[in-house]
Image 1: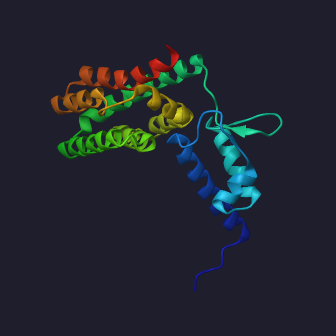
Image 2: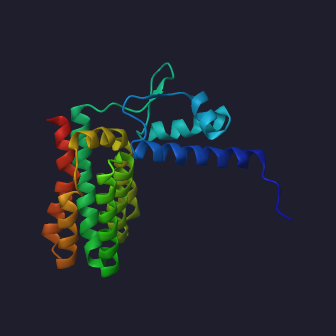
Length: 216
């Protein structure tokens, strides 16, 4: 017989569901920069009480995914040029190191998987699917970095992605892409060749070039 969940366990599960749902929406750019959220609206959307909604928001505020004013107003942050440059520099530091650590463990199955994801990116670009593009692009990077076997570093990189999510959606509109990022092909080529300097350069270029458009 399955034991009946305690009220605290039900609230905890609801909090986790709201947190993960909101976190994904922010990271994938499904919420615009500066868009206001309300606890009541979040509760309605996820069909939960105010408590799980409040706890999820507090957690995301702590991660920099949301901001909260002294009056309690919650919104996605609108990043200044200086903040975008800082986060781009963090991406370059963390992701270049992750790629470098992944290189010795890169095998053909990984390379094939990256090529498949890149083909998906080409499809979503043709369909002008901004959220699909961000999702597939992050999947490309995460798939590579998982081979680094550096979970703390990857968690830090994901926090940066989270803080950049709404801004990346705005960036996609500026880029007007017609194909998958050229640097992805260079990343794959460097992995095939075992070329660490080439890999580091390709990753650094990929994670910083687009963001430079926002601060130019």
